[in-house]
Amino acid sequence: MSWVRTTSSCSKTRMTEGGGQLPPFFYNLIKLNQVKNKELKDRIYVLKGGTAPLSFMLANRHTRRHPLLHFDAETQTNRELRYARNQKSPFVDEQDDNAIIEPIVFEDGSLMVPKNNIALQEFLAVHPHNGNKFEEKDDQAEVGLELEILQQEVDALSVAKELDISMIEMICRVGMGAKVDTMTTAELKRDVFVFARNNPADFLDLIEDPRLEMTNFVSTLFSKNLLGERNNGREIFFNLKNNKKRLMTVPFGEDPKSALIAFFQSDEGIEAYEYLKKISKK
Image (cartoon, rainbow, N blue to C red; front, top):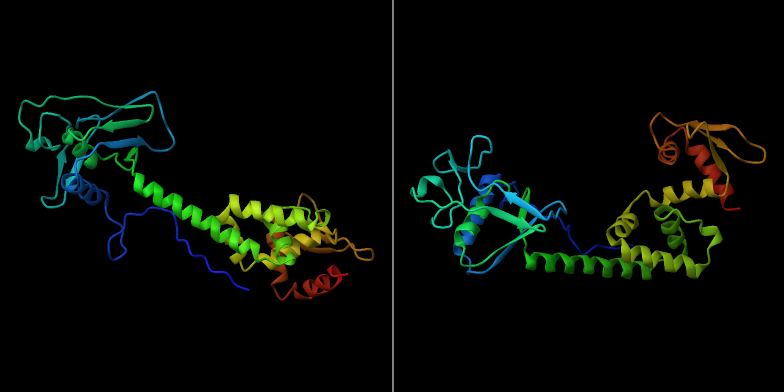
């Protein structure tokens, strides 16, 4: 049985129509035009990175110590920025000599700019730190992202519902490290559903991983004590009644199970793989 994911990546990118990435100055210019052309409305800006200090003061004008420049693609020049509520432009070269400078302060990580303060909205649209230190809160984008996550949960739970017991055991053993031999069928199904609901992206990735079956087989060998590790995982030995020989040496820095998977897929390890596959079913 195969499953097809219907959701797309949740990440945000700044792409051109042809697929190339927009330079930051061009992206900010687009945002400025959007502010000029959009309906008048209150806008909320939030600090990025999960930070929410009681008070954060954003740079409000260009200085030698703290440059605040916007690259103009038409003139191929850097234009100084300055926020002045009594001016019609955020660019110093378009302002008069009566500019009144005001501080820009984020309180508890957010800043609400009313619709009648177009000067500040336009200034923030082209601010070099827009998208880096702060961003405009986009309620529609957040709703869309939440909807996509919910759709992903539905997809994951739908797939989990169709799994047979052998696949359920694989998911529990590989994805959650569960000791499936000590769990009931009901417990296994419950854990798979919880995993799919709480981590839908990881669950779907695991389902589609072509290495899942081999990873499950290797985990089974260790859980049944058919193989064992020695020397802090540097060597893997047979742990059979009549065979305690070394199977392989784990390359330095590699995970023992990952190294064993690669070994089984090589010409050198295929014979051991077939042998262990046979006795693991007993």
